[in-house]
Structures are given as structure tokens and as C-alpha cells.
Figure: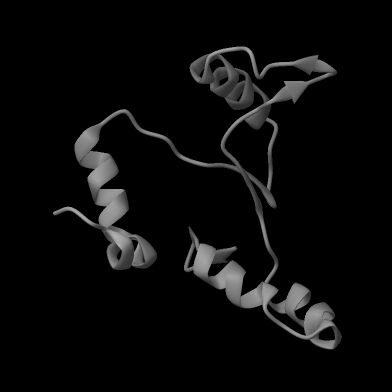
Length: 99
């Protein structure tokens, strides 16, 4: 789900914990997105034996045609950028065991 233009797993979890009677209202008020990280198969071709970087490349090719609610999760090989992403996630801060 998007909150202030950013993906929010916390908002998605709050949306999922509800009575079935409220589901229709929540779907309209807080639409969810599908965020893809990996691609395990495409067009009937199994990709799980391929390295992740190959699967990710195929997924990124497919994602050029994505539009909301389909989204591609960001990835980085930059350690500092990864630390910054980790630091802005509230749940990650609560469970982090190193500094």
C-alpha cells in the first residue's frame, strides 16, 4: 500500500486485520499494491535454477509494462543506501540486533 507516495507494509498489515464486513470499505479507501521482488517462472519456463541476478533482470524487463497496482521493489548493491533504507523502516529498527 502507498502512504504519502511510499510503500507501507505496516499500512497493509493494518488493512488485512479487519472483519470481513469492513473489507469492501477498506479496499476502496486503502487499495493495496503487488510488489514484486523475484521471478520464479515466466511463460511456463521455470527460473528457480537461474541465479537471482538473472531472474531479477527478467523481472525488470517485465516490469517496464507494470502500472499500479503492480510495482517493482527497489534493490541496491550500495551498502550505505541499504543502511539508509533499513534505518527508515520502523519495524527494522525494533528488531535490529547490531548498530
